[in-house]
Amino acid sequence: MPTGNEMFKLLNQLDIAYKAEMILYQMHSIVFWTTTLELAMFCTLFVIFCTAPKSMAIMWLTVLHLPRGVIGAFLLKNLPKSHEIIEDLRFDDIPQTQMSVETVSEKIKFSLSV
Image 1: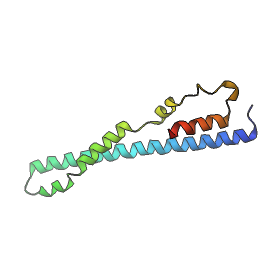
Image 2: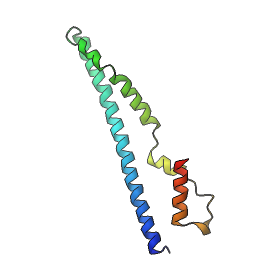
Image 3: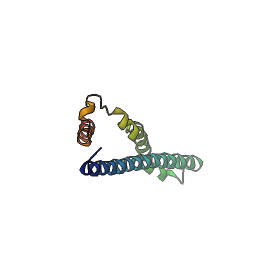
Image 4: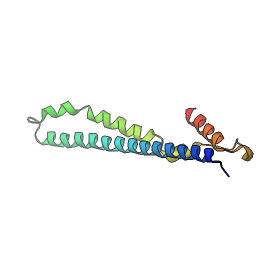
């Protein structure tokens, strides 16, 4: 049974992990919607340009939104998700007798830093 100090550390680590997952999810959401809007805006303006090229020539000032959208899609594909980070953690090298909040915490810190 964990002591009071170990429970405090465990709850503190759980709080930090929950906040980190929320930040990671929000970052994925922001990148997804920004990418979607960048590409949709450029495609919409290009369609409008094709209907009236003389009056919409200024549309080409938004040409940089296209590579920004492509880079965002590439980042979104390659950013790790929280469940992928957890799946990569391995606790096989820690014996059952030495398993504690501190050893698991140190193992997670080491695994995420490497």
